[in-house]
Length: 320
Ligand SMILES: NC(=O)c1ccc[n+]([C@@H]2O[C@H](COP(=O)([O-])OP(=O)(O)OC[C@H]3O[C@@H](n4cnc5c(N)ncnc54)[C@H](O)[C@@H]3O)[C@@H](O)[C@H]2O)c1
Ligand SMILES: O=C(O)C[C@H](O)C(=O)O
Image (cartoon, rainbow, N blue to C red; front, side, top):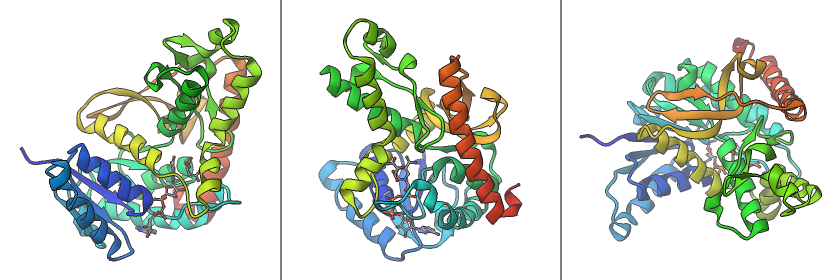
């Protein structure tokens, strides 16, 4: 059986890490694409040269021509620019929207049957625009953020309680910005909801709120430390988890920026919600019950994403 083909559109910090992880996991043959000629070819060759040592058999190539992504089963999009200290993700909207237009056209022409995972920021607006520019079905275009934000929350909770990260689950919903919604009631340690752990005296409400705020600021914390760009190891691992669930039809329950058509009272927008990812792409959007406070926080986050989509329409009226 032929191998799957994975196209990485953008071969910067996340793109290179994606290629390495996809190779190590033998998810398929990998094409790195970038407008910066030489970077995708160089990274492809470098990672290929690690394959005899690591013992993985995949073809890794680099290209600066969209024809190289032809027939890709999965496209992971990181093309664009990342923020630097002092910037918000939203400051990237104008420049990255133009990039999404080019990427959408490339995918539409060469990989119309792919499952597309967008990572480029500001995430919820960019994946929304990418789906429209590419014309692919909405269930085949999804945004990566919730897996990353939930992973950060899980790590901080595991450290706080001195337990394995494996025993912590978390759901962070809403837009991937300052208004994201880490849900304490649906996040657990050993199956026990955080709200119960407060009652049991494991953690105070105030300390839990600090951990939640650190999660919301998780991206900015890393930008502040790196100074030259943003996080890439954890974002790449998160997108690979989504790609693997699609390619292996694992039907993982993962929080992703998915196209909503009435769920949670939201229409024609991408926002982070729990989904099931399998061979059909986004096979299900799980509508969990939100209490009044949670719903208010979610709606506020939806409002922030709606504002960004409006800003996209002002720049590219065809998106309406
Ligand atoms: N969704 C998330 O959770 C999340 C997490 C981390 C980073 N990000 C975002 O992902 C994006 C990529 O981050 P990075 O660290 O890999 O950045 P990077 O600057 O290292 O890489 C981006 C690459 O895109 C390429 N590029 C620019 N314009 C292009 C175009 N028109 N066509 C093809 N390639 C193009 C650049 O040459 C560069 O190699 C940023 O927008 C960043 O904010 C999102
Ligand atoms: O914070 C950023 O700019 C990158 C990304 O969205 C992240 O959360 O790490």
